[in-house]
Image (cartoon, rainbow, N blue to C red; front, side, top):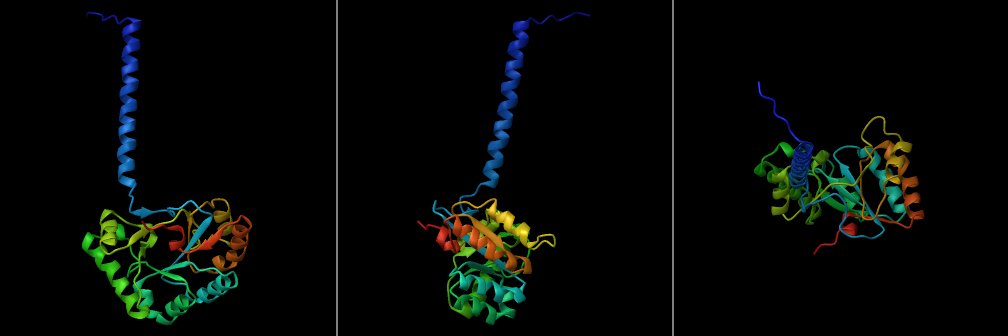
Length: 237
């Protein structure tokens, strides 16, 4: 058996090359991952740098809490964006009209509350357009923002929304208020610890959200922020 003797210099060069090779692989993996996750047609926050924060309320349930939400916003001279499902709209046209009459912005939340990341391009387009038509038939308005239920989307969702003239909206601050353990204080903390310029705060019509809103609004006002709609944090070029 023949022994192979490697000098320290050769070993050092080999280790350097090995490290460079590993770093290159890591860089490629990071690059590929960023290519898959970043999409310029998906907005997790507004595209301006002003002290404005948008409230986005997704509605597919929670009718009993909407009047109190609206009253809180009215008292504080605030208009937000309500993303509504077409199926909910068909059952609650009067509540939709009430929201709209209070000068709130209406967004598209799809017809059915389902995982759009599991749908094909055609099915995505069908769900978004059906909700669009349902809302337009009641309010006679065109919509420009689409928020996929549960934040679930794929490339077909993005393409379908864009082809229908929509911008796909996500969020940068999640109240997670739909969860049973989300109390008023927890919801307040989730917003007040993460607020930033052009943030999009996701919420739903829940009892604890209604309780938390006055304190969240007061906190943001004290920090010099305006609270508004998705349109208030989006500059359309």
